[in-house]
Length: 449
Image 1 (spheres, rainbow, N blue to C red):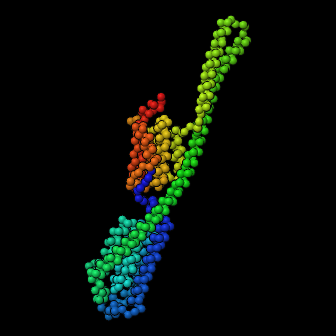
Image 2: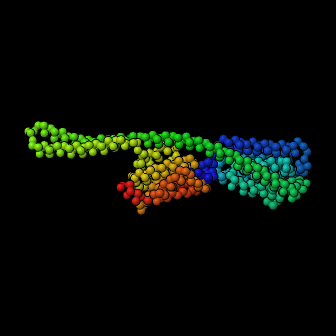
C-alpha cells in the first residue's frame, strides 16, 4: 500500500522537535535576527549618538512636545520589547493564538521604536527583516503568507502615511521626500522579496527534515516488521506443533478405540476356542469367519490411521483466535494502540474465509504502521444478512491519493473470487480506512461439504 498524502499533525510535531529544524530554523533565525537588530542599533548610534544629527537639533529646539531623552527612551524601550517578544515566539510559545499576539506585539513595537527615526533603509529595514524572518519561520505557510502580506502593508502605511492611523509624524521635514512612490515601491519590493526568501528557506528545511523523519520511520518500521514476523513465525510454529500434537493424540485415541477393540475381540475368541471342547466344523467355520471379519475391519481402520499419520503436517493456522494473538504481537512490538472488536462474528467461517480475514488484518496493521504513521488502529467485525463486514481504520496521516500496492491488490482479487469486495477511503491528515465485505452463506455450505 502506497500513501501519497502530505504531512500531518504527528509529523509536524516531530518536525518541531527535531534537530534539523531546531538548528536551521529556530537557532538560525535567532542568530540572524539578533545580527540585524545589532546592525540597526549600531546604525542608530552612529546616526544619533556619535554624530551630529539635524533631527536631534530640531528636537532640542522644542519644536515638538518631546525632548531628546524621550526620543532615545522610545527607541530603547520598544527595541527591548521587540527582542523579548521575538525570543519568546521563536523559543517557547507554540500556541497559535498566543503566537499571533506576540507577532502583533513585535509589529507594533518595531514601528513605535522607529517612527521617530528618519532612516528607513539603514535602521528601520533591519527590524522589519527580523520581524519577517520570525513570522516566516514560526508559522505554517497557510498562516505566515497572509500575516506577512498584511504586516508588510501596515509597515509601509505607517512609514509613509503615519497620519492615516493617528500617529504624529515626528520625523524631520526633509524626510518628506522619502514618501515618493518610488520609495514606497522600493520598500514593498525589498520586504516581499525577503519574505519570499524566508518562506522558501523554511520550506526547504522542513522538506529536508521530513525526508529524514520518513527515513527514520521506515528504518524503525522495518525493524518492527522483522520482530513482528519473528513473533508471528514463532506463534505459527507453536500453534502448528500444538495442532499436530492434538491430531496425533486424536489418532492415538482412535486407534485405541477401534483397533484395540478389534484385537481384544479376536484374542477373546481365540482364547474361547482354545479352552472349549472340540467344536463341529460349522461352529469352527463360523468362528473363523467372525475373526476374519474383525481382522479385516481392523486392518482397514489401521490403514486409515497410518494414512492420517503420514499426512500430518504443520498446518497453517486458520482459527480466528489467531486474530487476538496477531493484535497482541503488533501492539507489543510497535507500541501502537490496537482495538479489536469482533462484534457478532462467529468463531470460524472455514479455512478460506479465516485465512482471508487473518491476512487482511496483518496487511491492514502493516500499512497503518508503515505508511500511515498511525498511533491508534481500530478493527471491528459485523455479520449482517449473511455478509461479513471487516473494517480497519487508523488515525494516521491518511492519503490525498490512494494507490493500491501488491498486498491490498492481491487481497482484493481473492475477495472478488468469493463474490465480495474491498474498498479503501481516506481523509488526508486524519485517517485511513479499509473495508471488506464477504458473503458467507454459500461459502459456509461449501466448506461443510
